[in-house]
Amino acid sequence: MKGGAGISILTKNPDAGTATYDANDYFPITSDRYLWEGANDINAQGWVHSQNTASSNLQVYYSRLFPKQYWNKTIFSCEGASKLCNMDSLAVNGSSWKAYRLPGPTRSNIFASKDAWVAPVLARTGPDGAVWVLDWNNYLFLHNPASPGGDGGAWKNDLRVKNTNRIYRVLPTGATPEPVLNLASASEEQLIDALGSQNFFWRLTAQRILIGKATATSITKLTDILKTNKELDEVGNSPRVMHAMWALEGMGEFTKSPATYIPILQGLLKHPAWCVRRNALRAMPRTADGAAAVNTACSVNDGHAHVRLQALLAIAETTPKPTGMNPIQASYAGIDGTATTAQTASGVATGTPTCSVTLDPSVPFVASTGTTANRQLAQAPREGLRFNVRAGGFLLMPHGNLPSGVLTVYDLQGRAVFSSLYDAGSASWSVASAQGLNQPVYGYAFHGADGYIQRGSIALLGAR
Image (cartoon, rainbow, N blue to C red):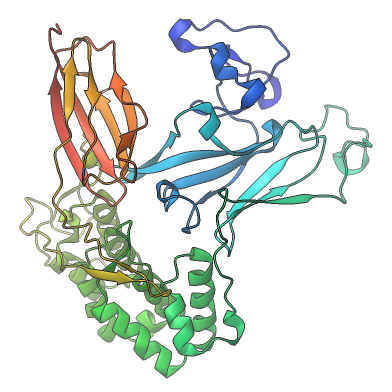
């Protein structure tokens, strides 16, 4: 229940009722997050929070200094009014995304403080792999009163300062920060090598510098990466190809030489990394030839919903509208069990799909540091999920080669009734058992961090 001025009133746990208490304890927060830790462990008192009032910034952890469960899927967002930076686990949800709270109140915040002057407003992955938190260091983190009485509507108050702030660096205990590169004086070869760095900061910096130089040699080398590189890293991505692609796009090569690059981008629509296929569709020129390439590759029938959605957009945004194309039709949100069929814009034939996508084989990923991660995630066989069924619930069993991801269980009405995160590194579930289930059959969907999807059903013992 919301209070005045966008503030959220503390409410009782929905499992115990929905009573609202007239109290002065206001805790702005999104509905599925814990904010406080230690002595302020609200969850231990049986409370949850609702809504959010002052969330600022959002970033995924794109480095490797933190443990593996953080890589490319933990998101940080700051809540200055509540003096913390929250963590959530990001997972594919059909053609969109969904964030899940990390288990336990002691793991839900990357940064929290009882200091009355702490007001974190931004958290970013630094060039050293640590998380850097910007603290506004201001006692007054709130809206102006109704009658501010100050110049320009600002509230004049000695506690609202403008000349101080603090910066914190957060990193795991005992961790050695990643090396800081000097790309200002790097050679062209070193810049291209840095496109495969384990840290997004350095990849993006190398991409920016290469765009600024845009030499004939770098264009040739970047183009060769798009033609030949099928590397996958440990989370199923291919960063070197991604940054080479957007470096060439930033140089204007796709627009200047469409006859050269449309076939190359079409080839990337078979790349083993779904993120490469998705971005190749985003970069594809919006011309009749570009739309024809998307249609020929049959990307609207790709195995990943994010790729299917981008394929539909690539064709729908084409000017002029293409004609004489094969019938195409795609389900762009069907991965999570809520299938929605979408047909492309006018001018494109629709009907029963007439083609399928066959991906190229992947190869070992070699990072710029020289380490090898030989995991062909897109093609590795997977074990089925194992449920130890009990009366009124089940127990989740560990797995040997299941990727990290999230499991969601649905009742017969399609409502999510259970969720658990799987950590492949420790072969453990965040919530290992479900109880209180009373329907005979439940459906489930597992979304792996590498794009792997598994769906099925669970029959419970003695349920009616």
